[in-house]
View 1: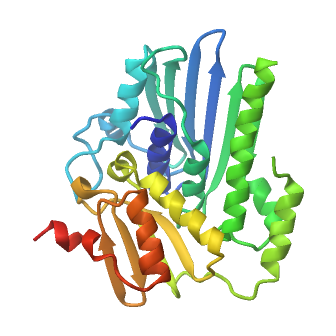
View 2 (view 1 turned 45 degrees about the vertical axis):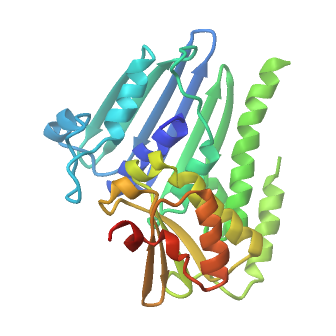
Length: 184
Length: 121
C-alpha cells in the first residue's frame, strides 16, 4: 500500500466489522517537531487481551476464508519503517484505538494520498456509520463530521451520489486550504 | 470550495426525485475492499463507479464496498448483482471498470474476458 489513506481505509474496515457506529480519524501533522500521527478510534465491540496481543501478527486473522491477516501488520510496518511507532489499545464493549506515529520527514513515509476517496468508501458502507475526521496541520484544523451532514440532509441518504461528490469536494479543498495558508 | 448551501441545494433537488435507490431492486455493484483488494487497487475502481453513476444520474444502481471472498490473488474483484444473476469480475483496474460500467451496467452485456471463470479453468 503506497498511501497512508489506504492504510486508514483498511484499518477502518476492521472497525466496521467490529460493529462500530462511529469512527474517529484524527491526523496530526507537525512539521516543526517532525511528526505525523494517525489515530483511528471506534466504538465497536473491542478485543480481548489475548486477541490484542496477537493482532499485529500477520498470521492472525478472525476470518475463515484465509489464514493470514495483513492489514494491521502492514500499517505497523509502515510506521516502524519511518522511525515511528504503532500501538493498539482496546477495551471490550468500549472500542479500539489504533495509533501510528511517523517521522514527518522520513523518506519512507508515504504521502497521505486521497483521503476523500477513503472517507467516501467508508460512508458508502452497508452499515450505517458516522465518520468524524479531523486533520491538524501545524496549528490549523479541518473537521469533517457526517453527523453534521446528516442534519442538513434530513432523510436523504448518503447513497444519493451527488451528496458523495459534494463530500469529496469538501474534504479535498478543506485539506488544500490548510496547506495553502501555510505557504503564505 | 462547495459550501453547505450547495449541499442544501443538492438535498432539495434530491427530495424532488420520486425514485429512491432501493437496496434490492436494480443493479448492485459490490467491490472487494479488504486488505487484499485495497492493495491491489480497489479504491480507485470503486471511485470510478461512484463518479460514473453520479455523472449519469442512474437511480437504480448502487455500489458498495464489501469484504474478501478468499481469492486474494485475483483482486480487485467486482461483483454485479442484477436480480438473481451474479457476475463476478476479477483483476479489475480502472480501465476494465469503465468497460464494465459502459458495457454491462449501461449496455447489459457481460464483459466476458474478465469474468472469474476465465482465470480458473
